Length: 263
Image 1: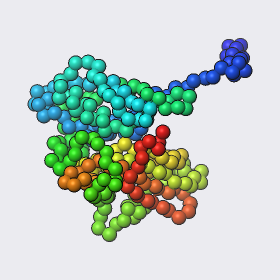
Image 2 (image 1 turned 135 degrees about the vertical axis):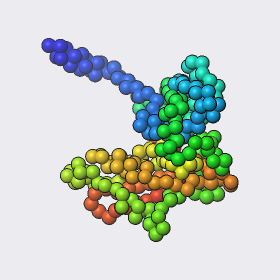
Image 3 (image 1 turned 90 degrees about the horizontal axis):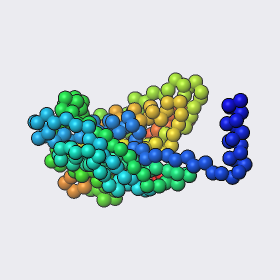
Image 4 (image 1 turned 90 degrees about the vertical axis):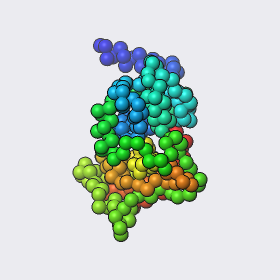
C-alpha cells in the first residue's frame, strides 16, 4: 500500500506539471581517487612545519564558478600559515566540475580536506621520488596553453619505442569487454605536471566494461618530459585516444585541451 501511495504521488506531481530539480554538487573532475593521488603527488610540505612536527587536516571552503574555475578559498579553522598557503596552492591545481541544477552549470562550494602528516609525507616522497621541487619547476599551478610553450610535453619512452608501441605492450583489454564484444575508443585529457607525472584525468569519451579505467591505468604508467615555457618546466594539457576491441588499433596523443569543453 505504501508503494502504491508513493507511485500515485509521483504521478500526481508529473500530471500537475511540477518540475523536479536534481542538483549535482561541485566535484573534482578527476574523481576522489584522482584527487587523493594528486595531493600525494604534488604536496610540498613546508619544511619548518616538518621540522616542528606540525600535523593538521586543513579544511578549505572552495567556491567554484559555473565555468569550473576556482573563484576563492576560505579556511574553516585556524591553522599554521605555511600549511594554509600550501593548501591553497594545491586547490589551485585541481580541475573542477561545477555544480549543476536543471542541467545548467551554476556556482557552488566544495569543502576540500588536505591532511598534513610528516610520516605519511615521507612515504609519498619515497614513492614519487622527490621532496623539494626542482628550481626549474613552475609551482604556481598555472596551466599554460600549448601555443605559449617553447617546448611541448612528451612521454619518456625507451629508445626505438613509439607511443603506440608502449600502449600496445601495456594495455590489457578487460575480460568483461572481450566477452561482451565491446569495441570503441576512450578519449582522455590530462595535465602533465612539472615533475613529469600526470594528473587531473578528464574522461572525454567513456567506454564501459572497465575499458576507461584500463586506459587511465596505462596512461599513468608513463613518465613525461614536462612542457617548457622559456627556462621553466610548466603544467600543460594533453589529450589521448586509446582504442579497444575489434578494428585497427589506434593510439593518438595530442597537446592541448579546452577545459570549458567538458561542461
